[in-house]
Image (cartoon, rainbow, N blue to C red; front, side, top):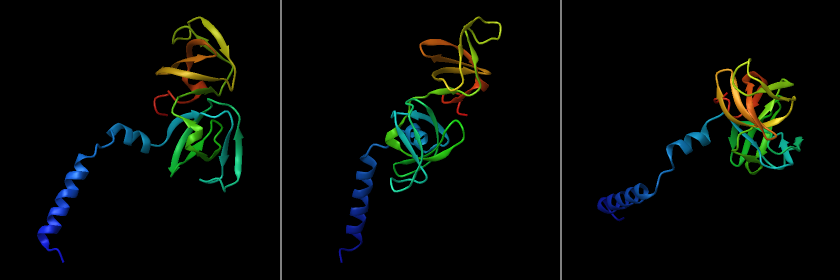
Length: 165
């Protein structure tokens, strides 16, 4: 009806409009689509469900804000997650935060003043205590637990800040 020149002009105009739209940052796209990755619970009460939607039964109710969660997949606004004990289910993305946290899985553990066994003990951190990871290097992680900052053995922790594990 309109002919080849009109089709060509429309295609060229569409290409110009699409190229003018800013592309999302490459690292943001990679971060959103890379699994597994760690997050933490944003809410102080969060339902883990058997499937990606409110119609699915509740599998588990978490009542601890800041608990580390591993995101292992996604469907629309729902995230397939795993907790530190290996339980898997689905949570709505609004319940999760990108803030990293760790939980002590093998305790009590000494929190040391430096990343070495000979360093002084600042505190003893019990199993199931949640902290904030600061840095991990080799077998040690620097972390903060209830206002105390120090170094703890990496194998005793589960969660974010562990070099992508």
